[in-house]
Length: 199
Ligand SMILES: [Zn+2]
Image (cartoon, rainbow, N blue to C red; front, side, top):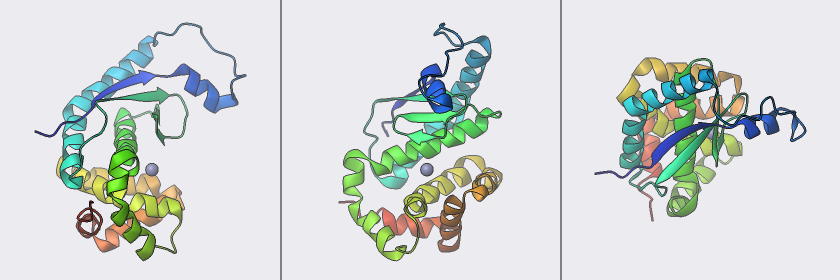
């Protein structure tokens, strides 16, 4: 059985404050408990996690052939922040399914881009750096990630969610470019080239 980390979603007021105005931003409330609205949002994320997230993390480990290094990962939800992979920070999007997809994106970064796993993928990253040397760092960094995510969408959600993510990232030229590279090469080809090189 594939071992995957336990995921816990938490609201982070301090991160929200930092991303808004720096530390000087006045705290709206000293109360650390989530509001009813936030609790409701967290339970929607938890439900999505139980239905899809567990399967997705198992599938990621199967695709990459690599173990998850962490036993537990906290995903911090904030009002407006840009997503970050370490620690995992995601924005509170209107539709919780979008926050779910962003969580998976950031967790794929963690899985292949850091620690022992990243060391074992050096040859894969060398392939990316050589064959896509004219692309920006962000584009190169997202080629294997979008190949994995494509595979998850097709297996777990279907074409419509994949099409949604492609469209959602269109406003970012570098993300858009890496989706297009994965599309034109085929995600399976990217995975074949990137992962058999595990050392
Ligand atoms: Zn990313």
